[in-house]
Length: 207
Image (cartoon, rainbow, N blue to C red; front, side):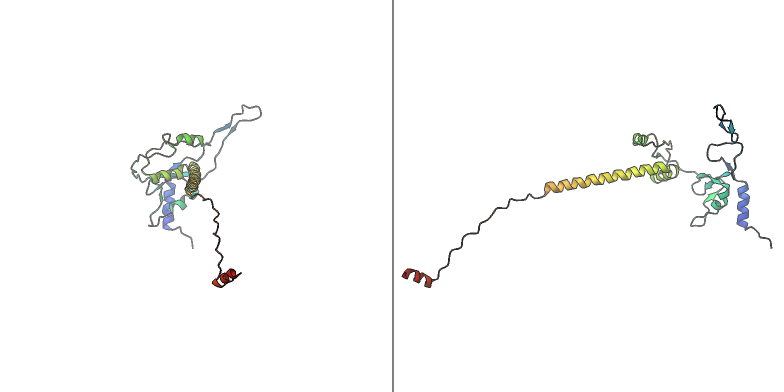
């Protein structure tokens, strides 16, 4: 008996054939000159052929965000679903209108910490229409993962330094407010009067 592909997979296969091609990641192109052969010990080198399954554009069905996907992984991505059963990705632009915000990427040139970020060697980003702080963080984690990790590491170290400084300050205040040690004075116990009974007194008088 001949195996048949499930209807869902057949539909996805048909959709994949019509998927919009996306450029290959990286900068290497077919017929790109790798070495021009002008140096004495080299010969001209040209990228003759690139072997790849190819990439296509896929879109988030809720946000409309576009991303590249290798054709080898496309079926797997198109089958992803959310808890409510809806699909996560589609091959067609859903044309979702996202309300533009006014918040800027942390790597924007106008960020107050830009001079510090320059010293850290962080890149710049001109995105300035992010709707919320949550989406700023999401943008950083998704688009600037390495820079985000550096910023978070630096923030954590700064908090540790502040905590140490606060503890030192509290200890200094406690030391200043502690009661002074009073000098211990030696107290002499008064001499006790010798007790003499009446009988003994009579004996002493008779002598």
